[in-house]
Image (cartoon, rainbow, N blue to C red):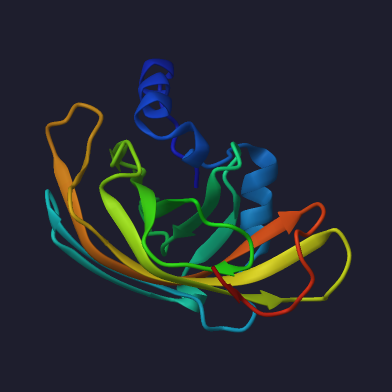
Amino acid sequence: MRVKWPAPALALVMAACSASDVPDAGPAAEQAAAATAGCLASGDGYLRARIRGALDLDIDWRNGDIECTGGPRPDGSGLRVTFAGPEQSDGRRLRFVFGIAQAAEGIAAQGLPVNLTVIFEGERRLFATQGDDKCTVDALTQQRTGPLGGGSRSWRIEARGFCTEPASTLQGDERLLVTRFDFAGKIDIEGESPFTGTESHAS
C-alpha cells in the first residue's frame, strides 16, 4: 500500500528524508511488490527492532510476513534496504528504510553510518533521522544468491546496528528512538560487477 500524501506534505517528506533513501513509488513498483510473497526465497529473511519514544514497539518480523527490497542508493553513496511489515485489516502498515552510507556491493563492513526512515502507512506519520549521523550499522555481511553471471545480481544482506539519537516527525513534535535493529534482506544490482565471486568479501 502506498501512502497518499497531499502535495505540500509530500514536499516536506522529500526534504526530511535523504533524497537517496526515499522509496520508489508508482504502479510498477506496487505491482512488483504484490507479485512477491515474503522477503527471501531462502525463507530466512527477518527484521527485529526495539523502538521507544512516541510509541513503544518490539518488532519481530519473520520472512513470510514481510516484503523486502534493496539496491544502491540512487546517488551511489551506499546501499538502501526496505522492509514492509504485515498489512493490517484497516490498511495500515509499518515500513522501515535503511540508507547505509559507504556500503558497497558484496563487501562486509563495520561501523557504517545509516539514515533511517520509519513510515506508518495509512496514518500519514513519518519519522526520519534526517541524516546519516544518528544510527550505525556495526556489522554487515553479504552473500551472493541466485544465478551467477549476467548483468543482474542478488545478494542476501544481513546487518545489526543501533541509533544514538531519535528519528523525528516532520513537525518535530514526536520522536522515536530505535535502540537496536537486526535484519536480513536483499539487494538487487544491475550493471557491471566490480569483482567476480559468490561470497561476501571483507572490507
